View 1 (tube, one colour):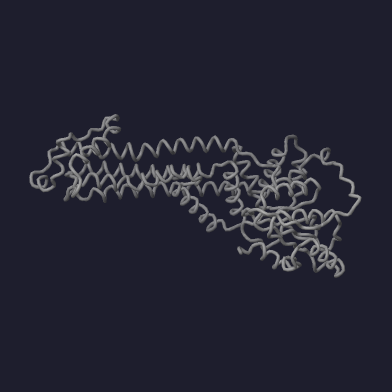
View 2 (cartoon, helix red, strand yellow):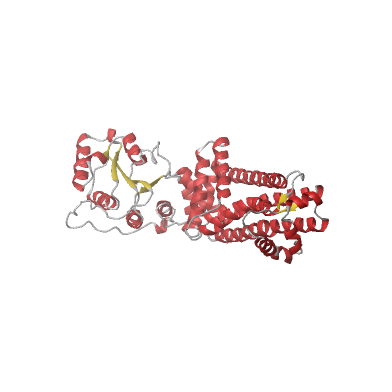
Length: 463
């Protein structure tokens, strides 16, 4: 298994299991030497081999390959059919400029859009997105399990982290257009080999010199590869359709036009897509070799801490402050991001985590240690979420450390709510203490929840 696939598998395992702990896998990882990433990879490999997730990743990749092959075959047939349709049945003359524009126009237009996407920081690769949509639809239709969604999200996450989304979309798009143009070339060669065509050009307002200059300019690059181009007098003569229909077109002119048309398709249609597909694939391959798990990120820090060897898990906690801190929420100014976070603070073991019924794209994190608290605050300050739901165990008494941390976390975004998990198991007195402390902190009454459905509905609401 390649290094990228190992990290892809690890990310998929994390998303599939969310924050559910696996003592056996964690013990296995802690027993191994290496850095945090290597222990995480060992943790993921242990779980994947045991639970069959590695096979599901392999099936995801196989379905992606089959979807790509289907798209490429469809492209070949589309190009072949398009060439035959453009040339027609040889009963009517072929307008060479119109035929060339029909065969290359959309390809060159989308190629220009792809090049312009670099200037606006867009990803481009429309046919790559089509392939991705087909792959995801196939997974939902035939696998129909949460693991397929986790594998897909893991792939997207790693590609985005490495800045590779543009390149894999571009590889698929260029390969698809390459197959389309190969199909065009195949259909063109077959039609020219089996039928006799008359080539003309027509205009109402443009002078003849314009078409002579266009044809000669387009024929320069194909000429370097040995393709012939019609002479100037042959180009001029091809402008009179009535005379050609009456007297016919000599074989030398027809062969020159056929060679010119074929060379233009090769040079301006096939070669650019071939070269770009190779270049994007090389860029993608290099980037995939450099992808690493961000073990210090919010997504991995809790697991990385648990996987530390026992000899490294000790630490010194700060002494309690002499004076009671002011647990007052300060509303942060500035634009929030797009993430929706559910962060659990010291959730009791008898409560289900992560909770069921989470909306799509909601990220969950469990915070237990002092180091995790500090790191989460740092990440929230750097990248404030669009919505933040802080979950606490209602049955536990609120202490000043927890309240101070909640106030700091709640200050990082304007859209924040607190969920008192397990409120049905807590005493009325303890719930009253929680509510009073949170209201004094600045948490609005309407964003203080003790019911699971309402809390998760608030987090998943698009408003």
